[in-house]
Each structure stands twice: as structure tokens, then as C-alpha cells.
Length: 268
Image (tube, rainbow, N blue to C red; front, side, top):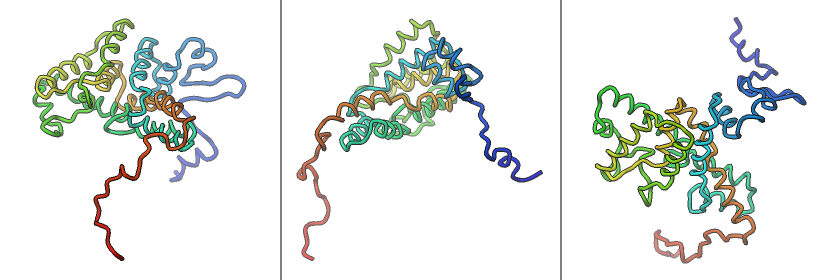
């Protein structure tokens, strides 16, 4: 057998397991008809999740994830990714370029929704398995890296105010949508209570959403894909806010704002 058979088969031919456009007829999307099935019955979020994971979830699950997206798209230019979008507008960049840069900046282990979702889902899944096998929360937490005497756990900390304003509507909408509290969310809540009592750390939006996604059967990789552009709406708003402003109007600096700490002036 030729060593290049795999690539020879793909020479001038594209293979796809996700979809196929039939010009002027229809689009096959994971064996669903986009024109006849999905456009008539599904929401945009259901289609996004189908593209991101290959799974066609019930509408109430997609609606809750859409609410989670709302919680990640604040139109506030102080937020890291939105600063990038605002700065881009300040330099006459297009909205698409600005938002693309903002999304790329959120592929971070610290914030943003995509990489943090992967990390938190992985941690919760592993920790839940250990807990069910008899390990204590104390033992599980002791394995984590620490900073200033507190464990560093993605999804269980927040800057400025430890109380996350998104949790109440998340819980309320989950009840209204008829979605039961699953085993991972129950575990995450118990973990949050332990962390609050011992380290003054509590679950945040990312921790809640990660547990929710695990309860719906998603893997960390699928959670990452779902959240790929979750911050886009807020970034669009922050670009629009600066797009018509005068140049250099976003956080302008004066020379006196820069503190020079190098060597003193010297003669050449």
C-alpha cells in the first residue's frame, strides 16, 4: 500500500462529516436539512451547538446556554476583551476585525469563557469522580495550586466582588425551563460552600455554566467549542461606542502620565 494513500485520496477532494451545501437546493448539516428541518424548528443557538458538537439538543437546553452567552457579553469597555475592541475602533479598524481580536484575546486560561470552560469542566469532572470514590473536598482542594494562601480554581473566584450577579438568573431560568439540577451542579454547589467557608471563594458564572454543560453530557472539548465566540456581542457594542468618536479618544495618555524609572539623563 502506498505510504501516501491517505493524502492521495484527498487530492482535489474535500471530505466532510459535518455538512454539505447543495447549490440552489439545500444544506445538509449533521444529517439534518437546514432549509426543511432546522430553519423551521430550531433556534440559532441550537444550530450553533449542533455545529460545535454534532449534538442536536432540546430547545430549553439551548435557551439556557443562550442566557449564559448574555452573561458573557457585557457592553462595558473596562472588560479586557472589550478594551481591545474599543481600542480597535479608536484606530478606525472595522467591527469584524475588532471583534475577532476581542474573541482571540478571550482564548485565555484566566477569563473569557472558552479556555476557562474547558479547564473548569475538566477540573469538575475529575474532582467529581474522585469525590464519588471517597475522597474528601479537603483532599481534592489540597492538590490545587495556590496564590496568597488560596487555591487557584477556574470557575470559583472573581475579581472585585465574590458574589456573581449572574447566578440568580441562571438558577431562575433553569427552573423556568424545566431543567433539573444535575449531579455536577450539586457537586459544584457543595464545593462552592466548602471554598466559601475556608477561603472566602465562591462559584462564579463560569463554574456554574461548566457544571451545567457537564450535566447535559457535553465534554470539555465540546464546551470549549460552544463558548468560542460567547463575548462577541459585548465587543460589537464597545466598538460601536467608539467608532464615531474623535481619534485617540479611548483612554488617552499624556506624557506626564508615564513614569520613567530608567537611568537618569546622561551626556553622550
